[in-house]
Image 1 (cartoon, helix red, strand yellow):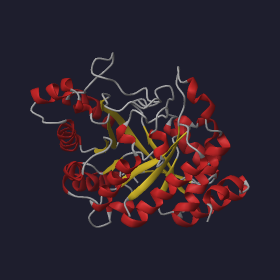
Image 2: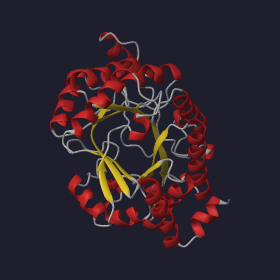
Image 3: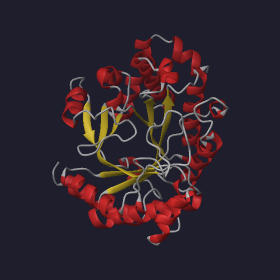
Length: 364
């Protein structure tokens, strides 16, 4: 099938109807969400994507590495508010910088991933909440070390086009955004049976063919390893000073087409998520396009990647979802399918997931 032509030429209502029928058949009209807390463990990053306002260099104002005490205080606040997921996010290869290595060494850690693993272990042991780590491109050894302390992990594939790494493009100065490196890590996560979140970033200068190629690559990875639990269709929002990307703002119809075609392409095997804070004007239309997940919504922390876009209130998401005759259901950082799939949970993460499931069942 020529998926690009299908996506762009199929009448939008036909595309939405087909996607919604798949959701009805595979997910019984359920749309999930997760209450989480965002932990930006460090915003120091080796890469320099032209669209990123999160990353810092050690000498930049606002550069930060959170201490264990800061992390624990925030996670305990989140637990009191009913959160179950802890999104641990950090810049790629921050320990490339000697200032970061010195900070880590003074505290007994050899590198940032060793520190991240210790933070995840502390979160589970001290609070029982579930870390979901997004630390950029990792090795098989690093993934294996994190797995016992993470209910799931993630990394946006963003786009499979090498063109976007060429001079003048958005990933020119971001070596960890080279598609083969990101695909290799997603493959390693599959071999290790790690429930995984990835996704497509649109509005950064990509073509329709490159968008579809990225979704097809994700589908192929899942067909091989069976570990991708959700795909995020995320529209980039240009920030102040990013006039070069303003012409690429993704239209509402394009987002609806991408969400629907992802559902059709994946045939219900992978959950399709669209961030509600970036698309709050047309939430009902997204639901009508067959999405099955709203992602993590925090009652405590902002979206540090898109700080200008506040989360909709959980009650509003539930009300909007149910107004279309759909069921809104809270989930954990790991989908139920993977909880019971042999090999996908181990160690402290396994124990924490089952304890949270037990606690939640008492209030149903």
